[in-house]
Length: 594
Image (cartoon, rainbow, N blue to C red; front, side, top):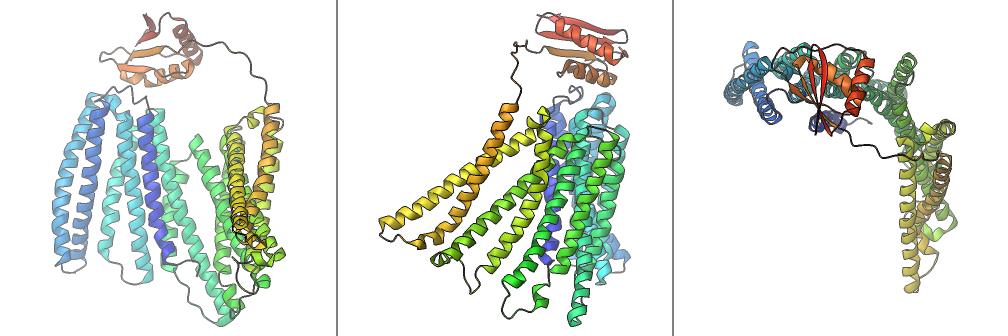
């Protein structure tokens, strides 16, 4: 079977990785951001302390309330609460009661700070707390529901108490989502934090949905395969597959199709191209490679005592994986092209990164194939170099894998690289792009390093044998792999060195530049509602503006983009290294400081 019990353990591991990755991204965003509302509220240190404790208290409270709710559902179902159930109930009351009381006090303090400082509602520290809670709650709900639905479909007697965890965390999620919807995102950093949450959960939902579809389709097709050839029809994994698919489609549909609708950010383009198109293509390529190895190996390396039914047993499930992952890639590519048609120029960098990643994967696959084929050729030409291979038809398996990787790698690299070269020739922007430079320098550096290491390895083997008076063709037994790597690395490094030289020759000559004056430090005295005005000035000025919130009713002026550009020019022309902007309903007064 292609799908084993280990495969089902991958899902919670993926959930944990995504949760930690999303949390790390949001926290890193908070640490990097310098626009936390100009820190007009309670201050960064107090905010971190307040919301950090609130998060810990909420986790404790939700865990305890889940145990308490489970005990209540157990009692409702007519079961007696005793033994471990009584211990769980006692802990649930203690943890839930204390945790909820502490969280309520901390949350009330946070709400009072919002009442005193309205801008606090948009503080990034508060947003980090909200989205971490939303992410933890959503993933906990999804994981617990997959277990409950799987047991329910399997007919092994799903316990009503198993609904306690998703019910409690659904309440936590709904409360914080209502807060998030009411407050909105008052800064670009807060909007980015929301996107990280939405797309992290979208990816997790898509993984659940794809895994469920692959397991379900594979089990059914595999059952049909065995029914047709040996009459055995016992599909495995159907309850888990249905639970993954049901939870996945709800999670992915709500976050990707609903919460992320209308978003045109760079993060969305990265998800579309890098995770959706590239990830789906990479998985489909792996499935296709597996199928090719299975079919090519049969005539080249037929295993003794193994029937055709056993040899081709992985084909049905692998075929379904190929269809599902190719469908994922096709959907995201269609969505990306549709959005690009609606907004020309959108997603250019993400699409370019996807193509260079695909070319890199194709080149790496081709490299492994050539190394393997060279090693097989050496073994065929020099019988004494066959030591690391075994069997009468020792070349069957490595030759099957080598041919497969050659077909897949050449196809993938040959599809993307010529198109990338064609796009780079007439456009200097493509030649100078970060994706292209990263690809070329990485491939060139890796190939040079691999070539040097393989040459050292090969030379070491020859010299050692010569010094021991044991020099013979048998030295190629250990050296055939180094020889394969060296030959391939030489070809790859020379070709990419020529491409680098071509790019350098085509680069426009650098124009002489005059050193620019360092940017001024700009501080704005502005009312709490002047955030959008300051952001407009930051965009026109090209630098950040430190904000100090006025406590009087000064008001905020309204002006056009042209007026914002004019104010930015006045700031640049103002004497001194620091400027204070006094913003009120009459306009913006610029006060230069020495």
